[in-house]
Length: 102
Image (cartoon, rainbow, N blue to C red; front, side, top):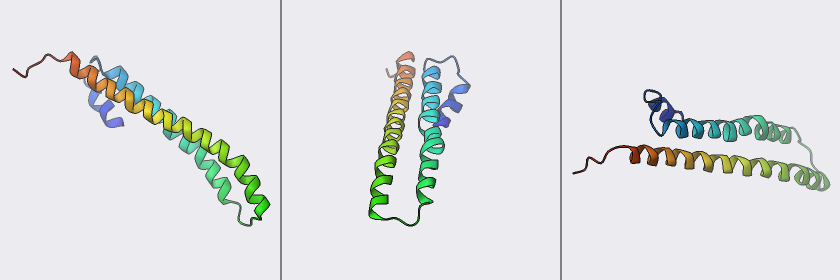
């Protein structure tokens, strides 16, 4: 995801630069930050439990699963949004170039 931005830095005034930078920001904060900041620590905390009874498993699942899934939805939406922004940057860049196919 950073490669498109690095390639665009040389042409920072191009039509797709802002969209590419925005896509990178959404990806970094919406997926990477959530993975390392929220879901990673939740997974580590879950691994610390070693002995479970049936009631413990049910209680842990009730509290853990809904919270983890909510963050996963945010992460999935951010990845889709970043990809969409990157596609828009490509199309905008392509449309701004003169047609030289003749």
